[in-house]
Image (cartoon, rainbow, N blue to C red; front, side):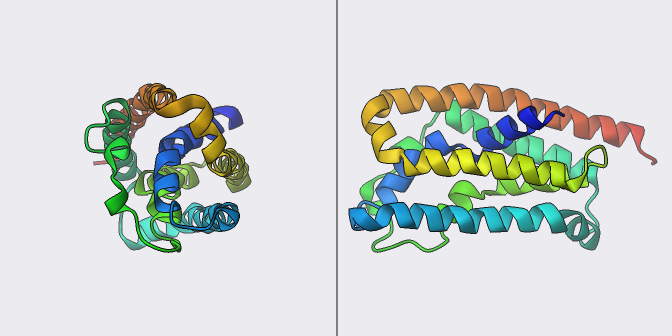
Length: 200
């Protein structure tokens, strides 16, 4: 996997376009001058959490006796379900009502976790960190680059929402979901291949 493909994969999984309406809904009762600060703060929390899983993912897998094959397969299934939800929103992101948003100023949950640092992103990070083909700093660079793009998009959420509109945001998310579907299937197949090639 190249650095660019790793960045794009993480960016798709973080789904900043799909998170725009969620962030705006949860921050609607927060003073406008504080919104940018909150988005930046929550983005930093998300990065720290993902870095934790990147560095300590292999140790956590060993502690729980989880093989890389299981992580690949479960991560592929999880990504596939999320990608289907992006393509066919149903009761997902786009049907959130204002009653579901928390009152006041959110802290860590749900903006940092699970909107940015969600279970699919954590699983993918753990898979990346278990790879031996690339050094850990390769994945740190990919994660930080994807995080910078995600945080920038979320900070520009009000502007992007006005420019693209609801339909434009939905179209972008569906396009990202289609690409993520391919990534999910490939991750699942990699897990099956590793399982078939491994000792039994």
